[in-house]
Length: 82
Image (spheres, rainbow, N blue to C red):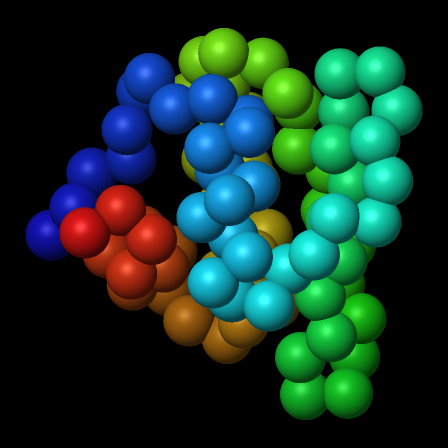
């Protein structure tokens, strides 16, 4: 059971999310916009390019992605960070 890391940067998270079909659509300043098409619907998410990402922000991002993928947040954390 993996824990959410507290020292991950936005750039590192973007690289990890490419495993789940997310791709970079644009970057404006310190915010990176990703998009994914899964099961015929598109999902867009904005990742701050901060180092590190605040834990509350990371938690909200992972919750949003888990809901979109139809898995629990803990399952997503295990897949990404294990």
